[in-house]
Length: 391
Image (cartoon, rainbow, N blue to C red; front, side, top):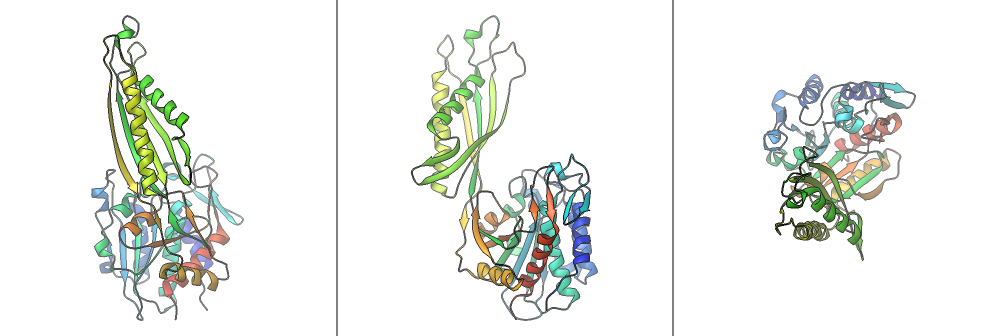
């Protein structure tokens, strides 16, 4: 009968949460994971750190940690993964136990269970498997960097070092029995509206205010139904303008404004349509505002597909294996798709369709973040069964 040491599993997640390591600063977390694996007999030669951080716009202190273990029996290679970084709000977290929950000691930080709990689940599964000498197929462990700032680690992973796994599993979320088999795609939109500067008190009519141009475009998008929840017939997506920067003085007609927005949809074609509507709205706004000399501002707009949507068939090998492990652990599995990005988006794009399972995370990215201990332990048990595979 497969069992885990709950005491060890809890100690492990508490230790990992307490390590400082936001996006781009995951090296200490990686070293701790490597140390735990080494103490279980995993040789240094089985562990490699790739150079994903060198290809990421954010830079960073380290790349993804990839661990390859030989199987003790034949079977298709399985990949277990989780991301190592946390959001900035959780960087200084100090975890404390409170009944069936782990919470941050301070009321001003998040916990960082997203996603140190996922790392602890994968680490617990493998260390228990090795400690108990449980037979298992070949395994690859992947601990990614910079998930929270655009899935950069998974996007730039050295896929050729993964050993061609045929079944792939990611831990990041709440319900251990909830299998995410699809996720939305997202495109980031960068917009710069360049107006014409002039003295705001002496000759405001000679200027073109970049803020007014941008505001006109945003109002147009809102009015036409292309901002926020976007529903056009049977097609659906979302868009959001999340960052605005511009201006330096009140006595100058604002010469430029930068906006950063995003568009999401499970349909790549409809997501592209949302982006086109953004472009058209800003183009209309630029041409509609002229100074006293009839001059207009300039629009500069570019886009970056952060990740594409994906959907794994429910009858695929990875989904079937995850369902079997959940049921063997005593729960009933449910599949779903989500509207947030996951490392699984890029793993699937690389040719490794990946199922994502939960590990007890609640209220992530907030000061109310908690980790449900019973759910976390259930996730560890499920992960061990997935790692061991069927007899």
